[in-house]
View 1 (tube, rainbow, N blue to C red):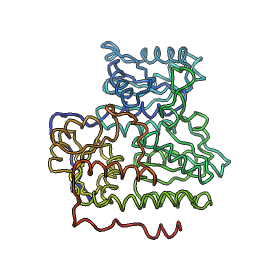
View 2 (view 1 turned 30 degrees about the horizontal axis):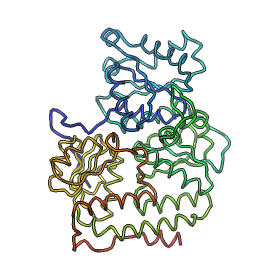
View 3 (view 1 turned 90 degrees about the vertical axis):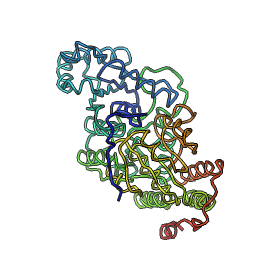
View 4 (view 1 turned 45 degrees about the horizontal axis):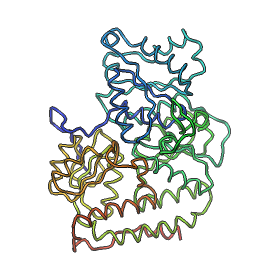
Length: 451
């Protein structure tokens, strides 16, 4: 069991953490025809907008209430009112999503009360749902903001249902999943004859497709009708520990039972996923996944010589850190340094002595004797100074193309990741450790079940 410690430094050097409001806005970008709004100063939204545009290389709809010195003291109700009315008249979104920032939270703006008064004064807003989520950026991190946004959507828009669609399931997607990951999960579920409702669905809105016409709000993603219809599902599949609270909230409101998969990178976890889907649908595991499993086993066999005994330093949001560290551990690597942004139950299960809630300076100091560094693009200078291979994972990733299309889930994604990391070791002359030449363990019982 890992010890969780917080960095004792008085200041952050080379930040790792992204803020809660940014995480919430990213989640709202997975909702069709939605307009995310940051309730705070114009600079907060501008910084977040630049970061998201550089990562996804797409036009990002994001608005702000543009609080100034006066509204920061007297309150931001007029700013919210002006923003909501302008957005409704110009962009005509299906949903307006308001994320509070540290400025509004520090003052203690009663946003829910403001919205109630605004609706009373403007009955024309009755046809436009408005969701507010409290996301102070002085606590928590990107993952917390994402999780809070999903929970707020469920509270505001989900509805119970007396009828069930035996082919429909809900999928609550964590922020550690890329658009490609969500697309892969959707394909796996659909191969069992099931119809998934993914919340939020970045694979529909930020997968890099070219829209036929311009839209001021998000294009693609989960529709409001789909969120309202989640109560008709027979099960909820929550991916990532961060989705645990949202899964409970959805079950409380709709009665739909949930199952949490804290990660989907690796062999055994995907065996469990396919077994779960097969039992849920009554459909045998499709032949193509038996072949993909065999391909992953062969990839692990080919690559494990170059993974065994390697020392790795990682820094990421908790669920992404957990997913990568456990997979690397299963491949025979040693997790020498693990840095995260916010606390989570999965951190104490990471196979290392200590997980530090810190920054990229802590990562650089802990990676001095390591063979590989994994974090987002802001860690590239540290890896260069140390002269070790560097793999980009997480957000932001602005110095490489295809951030949204990185695949690391399922048998196919795990195989791709195995080759990618293995080739980094090969290209940098890291010879295999003879004492680590034992074959990786495989889930024999799961293999027997599938065969």
